[in-house]
Length: 507
Image (cartoon, rainbow, N blue to C red; front, side, top):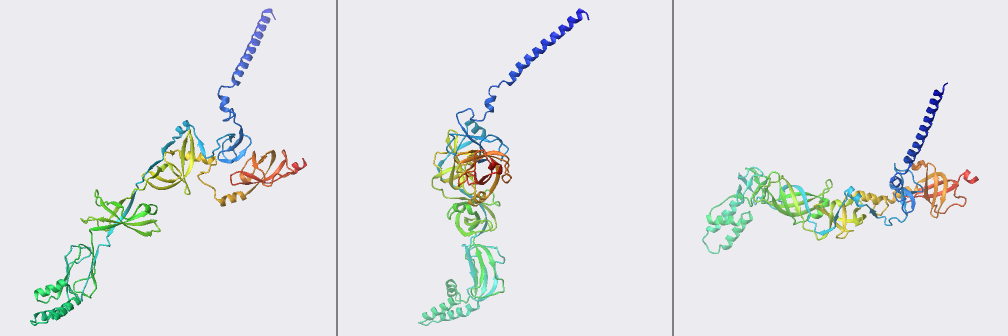
């Protein structure tokens, strides 16, 4: 090998060594840059409050706030991480704090509790019916025969004084002839006889007007023309020409149309707002644009079991006879104004079926759930009888989210509560587990336990309330134990029995 080749090989080796060292130094520098902490990233990775002076008391799942854990991790109940709880937190569990930015994102709006009167308008539907107080019944006053009938069909309209039928009354003939015979006697002392004959005509059913007609004409009038005592329609027609009628037999029934009734169905929960005398406006599809005014005549004291409604009887004027029975009518009741009371928008009230709750804004982003007693509701306003004061601000948008947060914190205004019977069933259930004692405190014991199938729990470390009778003397920190737990009314679990395993006993 000549000298030129040796020099070339040495030069290549030297360049390779220098390049490798340069790449090595560059890699170290880049690695240091990559592994260097990025400003703000470490702070974002730290749990909330970790950099503050607040001490973490325990971790819990906000959906099951009664369960406490001594270290962070994934919740055994939900697909979420456990949330730390810090010391010196908000002592008032009934309050929820929400920042202004979050309030804006959630669209939370408030309204002021005002004082005023609640003028409620109740709407209902009903059907037109005859006014049963405007009825005339025509009867036969004497035995006779129907010779002529002027009204031949039911529902024929009639006017007051219009002839209805003509009857021949045989009993009248003898009474009238007796009277005329005495009247034609030209002797003194017949006044008593005339009075007796006149009384006999009254007894056979003649009116004073008919008796005067006989006296004026001096003739026998055996026939009577029956006329309508009032205007209206014939609702009952029970006679025909040629029939024999007896004294007191019904002949015609006439219902007036000057005033009519509308029988309306009022929901049971609105019946307190409708009272006799309240003004009413009625409209019917058959007469568009026409408004009939009237008032509530009576509230019938009976509730329909199927529809849970009461019947309200409304009396309407009908001078032109446009309203006829059977028509459909829509009604608006204007109830009397209530006395001044507290009012809030109806959308602010959260009704659970057993209670009513509103979220009260207390300033500085704090909200408090308050139980209220509500009254009537109308025109988007609800009457508040107890629980609020004038001038307070209530949440009218986003209150369900706030109340859910308050419920998760375990305040007294939860949307629902377990019944005593349900609590007894939960408390009676016993669950078995095995684990290692990590710490024994004054009121709580921390155990790293395995899975508890009856509760669908996986392995975890958590705290339990100490047994009611105290801890056994043969159980210490670090022992492996069998234990039984039971749920308490506040959602936590208490040790009902605990004993060391064979391994723990030998230890």
